[in-house]
Image 1 (tube, rainbow, N blue to C red):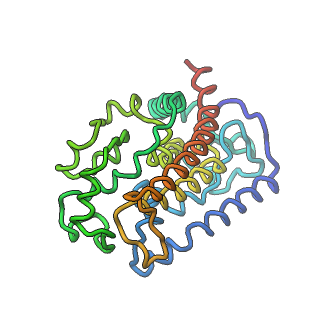
Image 2: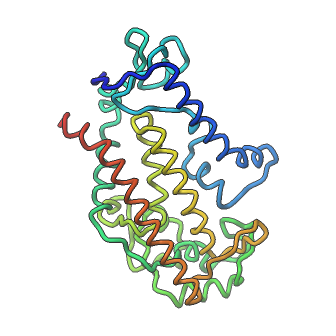
Image 3: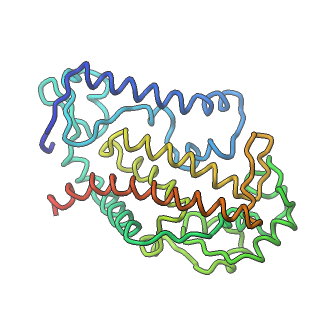
Amino acid sequence: MGGVLDVLPFDVWSARAAAHEAAVAERTAARLARRDRGLKHPVEDFLFDYYGFAPGRLSRWHPGPGVGLAGAAGMPRASWRWYVTVGDVVTLDERAFLAERRHTVEFVRNLVSATLSRPPALGCFGLHEWAMVYGIPADGVRHEAWPLRLGSAGSDAVTRTHAIRCTHFDAYRFFTPSAAPLNALQPTRATQVDLEQPGCLHAGMDIYKWCIKLTPWVPSSLTLAAFDLAREIRLLDMQASPYDLSALGIAPVPIETAAGKSTYVARQREFAERSNALRTRLLALIEPALTSRE
């Protein structure tokens, strides 16, 4: 089970759980309303569709390792995966979690540590989104409900006349076949740890993915902070994309202009700093556990 360092009284932890559920409800209300109406949103839906973590799962509050919840025995959370009950206290079964998820924990530790060790590579200008529509008609793009700001020909011209330096495999793998050779690198899953760097917007969003994959080890406070950052990053990701989202009230960051490039780099630098702060928190959470059991 691992050592329980802090047993929270029922009123304390139940209040924290309720506050977390309310915070998630506020953040996901629009998503649920759209889903009921069959509507899509290219910015906000990404966090749920791409990462596959439903609002209901996000709303579950997890205290993380070393915390016991008094009075939780017999409650639904006592039967949640990787929890164990001792008397009336429910806590994370750390040994069971690490025994089953060690490979994932080690991968996340290695990836996050490697990313933190590198300076951010700025100035990619979000061209991965342009490379995803390069050489295909407007009715064949991923977000076909939204027009291209510059049209197909204009979008292709931006892609051709800029240096593309995408380091992130999960962005690169969506490049069109004609755009892939234009990238300075050819990232693969095998080289992910070697190439990941904190300036990459998708790497910043993926901190949320690593929190999800390490649930319930990762406290919900960190997961929600990663969700909030990912939502902000995704907005810039789509603002800098070739799509015209003005109908949603989303103003573009026109990276084909000098002013747009300057705006993009400034926000990219800010996101790199904030994502590294979350990486540091995540690494501090998992490193001691792995070290003590190696």
